[in-house]
Image 1 (cartoon, rainbow, N blue to C red):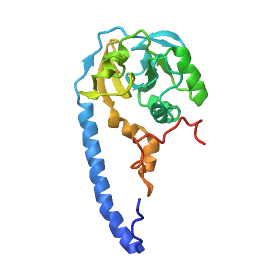
Image 2 (spheres, helix red, strand yellow):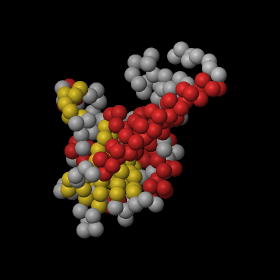
Image 3 (tube, rainbow, N blue to C red):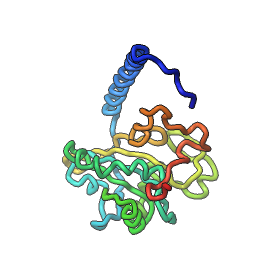
Image 4 (cartoon, rainbow, N blue to C red):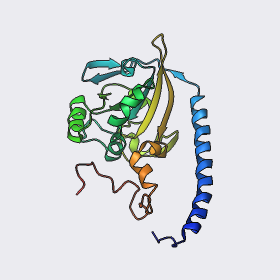
Length: 233
């Protein structure tokens, strides 16, 4: 990127105050969108999803762990893969520090992937993470939430991010939110995919503050530079 002009402190402050107005407008818009998100209708989950966890077989309701709200990362990790998606891993780097605070606000967070549980746990240990990760292998969960496809399906358009589109892989990223009623009923309240996940990637929020920004314009795709943290040179 070309360096911006060098200015006096007074000129910088004038430009900074102009940008501050844009930032405040964005904050107000974000608050309005968040309020609209909370008002979305909810859909009752009627299917009996089962997951394999370190505690044994668990239902979707079990994953709430006594809380009334649940955030699920649809972590890309196919049944025959040997490691998890690097971009999903970038998002997951934040979880261990965040989870205790979410718990204080009646929220649980779990990652769910298609791969067998032993692969998930081995990769989690390799990455040095501690968050809960369960396998949806043998369940319709990933398919029903539009994050897993067959090899035949990806030869054509698939339904992803609320539209029919081409997708290059059999696993896709996403985040879903669920609510648990006192009677044990589970409801789907929200899901986001693609760039909708951007605010959940802490690394990018930091990069947006620095002079070079994300600096991805000359890459073949936006996250080409990302590696598992143990693969950086």
